[in-house]
Length: 217
Image 1 (cartoon, helix red, strand yellow):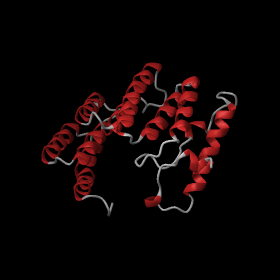
Image 2: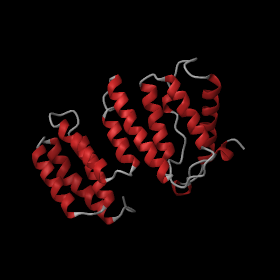
Image 3: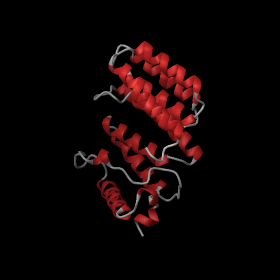
Image 4: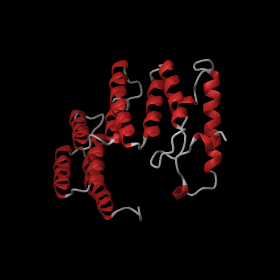
C-alpha cells in the first residue's frame, strides 16, 4: 500500500475503520449513509469506482442484496466506458456456486459489453476474455469456450501495453478429455507454459502482456 495514491490510502482506512465494522454488525442503513457522505466528498475516480464496487459485495447474500445490486447499477452508470464496471456487474450473477442458465445468459451479456468497451479502449481485452472463458466452462458451453480460446490465441498477435500480463487457464484444470478440440487444448497449454517461462525471474514492474511471437518464436 506504500505506493498507493493518498486518496486510495485514505479510502482503505475508511473501509477498515467504518464500512467493514458496520457491515459485520449488519448496520447496513448506517453503512450506506457513511458511504454516501464519503462519495459526496471525493471526486477521485478510482476511489469512487472501488467504493461502489465494494458496497455491492458487503451486502451480497443478505436481505439487502437488492440494494447491493443498485450500487452496481450506479457503478455502470458513472463508469459506462470502464470494462471492469461491466465485469463487476457480470460477476454479480456468477457469485453463487451454481448459477442458473438464465443467470449465465445475463452475465454473458454484461461480459460482452465489457469486451466491447475493452476493445474500444484497446485495454484489458484478454482479462475480459479470460472471465468469459470461465463462464462458458461453468455453463458447459463447449463450442463457445472453444471459440473464445481461439480468440485469445489470435489476440496474442497484438502488442498491447495495458492488459493482464500473463495467460490464464484455470478453466482447463478439471476439463474432461475430449470435451474440447485436443489440438486447441494442447496448443493453449503450451502457450501458458511458455508464458510462465517468459515471466520467470521478472519483477512485477517488468511484466507486460505477451505476444504470440514471444511464446511461439
